[in-house]
Image 1 (cartoon, rainbow, N blue to C red):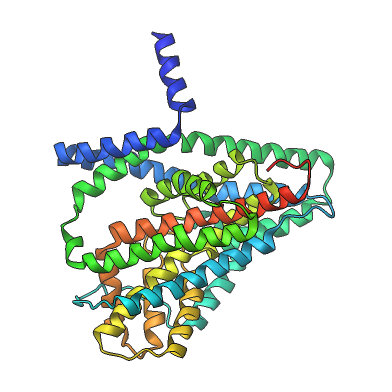
Image 2 (cartoon, rainbow, N blue to C red):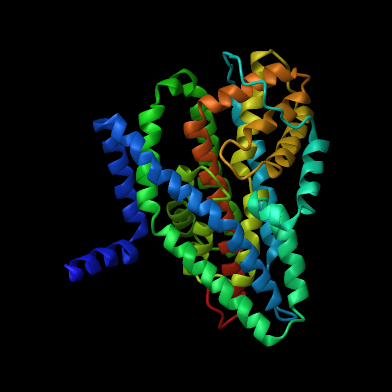
Length: 411
């Protein structure tokens, strides 16, 4: 009996995680089709998995960043700057792609009453103000509320301070980072069960009936995201690694994007990306900083959502959009996307900021937000998959390009 349990545990914790996730996905669909009540009950597994990821991610980011900076040697390159440039370029290009496709395939909305109790930011100034305030948040408050900007700022500061610590202290920080990583690996191995519960409960509770009304809008949104994931991002990666980018692109989509699609949270997917970066043998000093940073500023999917839904409202109201206005909208959407929170639906509340530049009243803008929540089952999932897989993709591209330029370094 004990040997059988050991073999089952071995399959669960050493088998292919992607294959296990696909099994969980199919099982979730089957359960939702066979029994709605059982599927809703299985949602507890999904909620536990997402909560566990969200719980461990802030601590993991704090410990890893402190340890990597504290042990950083003078003259050692971390390649953060080119990764940040790729993040920002991708987010800007995503807004431009959304503008072009929205012009080619204009959408209109049947605006419905939204939840006007939600108060979105009133403009770009308020978005930037929120980002700056997040940087100086209380460290314990930042950990409790998963404020990754605040966590990164404190981790950078403490890491720099610990660079002058004794070797024993630095060894302790390394041990702490390894311990946090081990806990994360245990949580990630539960992904098949978590995704099984998430899929079953989502299909049982919402179905896809409400999505048909906005089918063409969904096709446009997801089409823009696929164009970014399969055309624009590979071109950016090729510019770095100078070889066929698609093996790396598909690896990141398969192992990061699939999980992000179901968790619907860039923040919750940070541990998944960290684990993938380790399997790809990337530079830990680089990915321990770039991946949590990417969860905040690498927001191509959010940029697409903000732009497409804003232009849908513009077309509905018959407002003319010229080229300079389209360029300005792309810049505004990029800034808004970088300020979006890494939680489900985080980009939707920034749509009124973009709508404001066209003079669209806030009550109408909030109705557009309501439409976003209606289609959010697929829109937000695809958005998060693009955002999160892009984080690890650009980190891997820059790290591998740098490794190839330095003979004797593992790629």
